[in-house]
Structures are given as C-alpha cells and as structure tokens.
Image 1 (cartoon, rainbow, N blue to C red):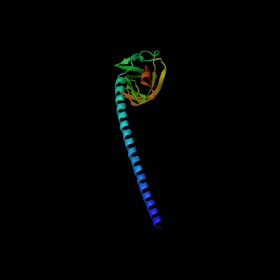
Image 2 (cartoon, helix red, strand yellow):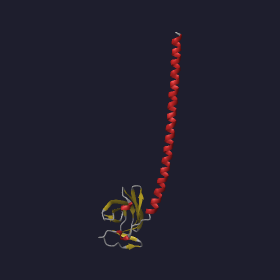
Image 3 (cartoon, helix red, strand yellow):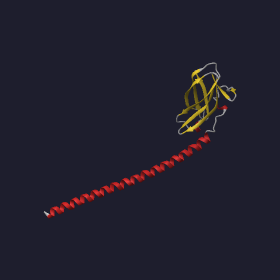
Image 4 (cartoon, one colour):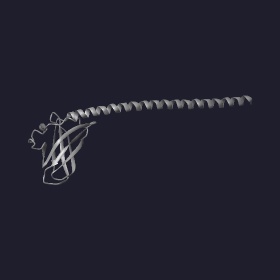
Length: 176
C-alpha cells in the first residue's frame, strides 16, 4: 500500500510539474509572439513614414506638372480665352487644371466658370485623357452642383488606375 501511495504521490507530482512546464512553455511562446508582433508594428510604422515621405516628394514634383494649352485635341479649334480661362464650350471656361498622383490613381482638379446665360443645378462635364501616342487612356464624366451664370467653381475628380506619366494631353467639354 505504501508503494501505491508513493506511486500516486510521484504521479501527482509529475502531473503538477509537467503542467507547470506546459504553462511555462505557453507563457514563453506568448512572450515570443508579443516580441514578434511588436517588431512587426515597428517595421510597419517605419515603412509608413517612408511611404508618406515618398508620396509627399512625388506629389510636390508632379503636382507642378500642368498640361499646356496646346495639349488639346488636334482636330479641335484653338480655345478662346477669357482672362486665363480656356473655352471648353457651351459658355464654360476652365483654368488651373492639374493632375496630381494619388496612389495608383490621379486626382484631376481645376476651376470652371459659367459664362453662359443659364443657371445649372448640375453642370455635367466629360474628360478624356490621352497618352503620347494619342491613344485614349481614360474617359470620365463629372458633375459640379449649383453653377449659376457668371459663377466659378473648383472641381476635382478621381481617375482610377491611371499612371500620371501616361497623361500627355486632355480634352474637357461640357455635356448637354
């Protein structure tokens, strides 16, 4: 009977000791995972800082890229101007057109003036972007709300999945 009790005591001790080792193993593994996650977070934050700096550098370099007045379609008549604005038809004029990189997209911005005799609840425009081989890269439509006659409004529209370097010229016109 003493042997059985001794055996049970040793068995119980071994269970307690092995559970303690198992708990210690689990705690060690958890600590290691915390260290790995912490290192990954630090690396991600460093990459994010680098990416932000790169985007800032790229946007200041390419936001200065304003397309020239002679970048209109060859078949279109030369635009008339109104104090720095270019005539895009139907009494609308545009100025300060810019293409700014925005990740894998391009943000198209500018200012449109309504010199027509009509007030527009929604003025609709189309934008066509061409590459240096004169191939259509993208065609988009955008709307500017509340355009009364003799008013000017800024606008912006996103050109999805367009490389800014592929933009050679554009055509913007009012849509009836």
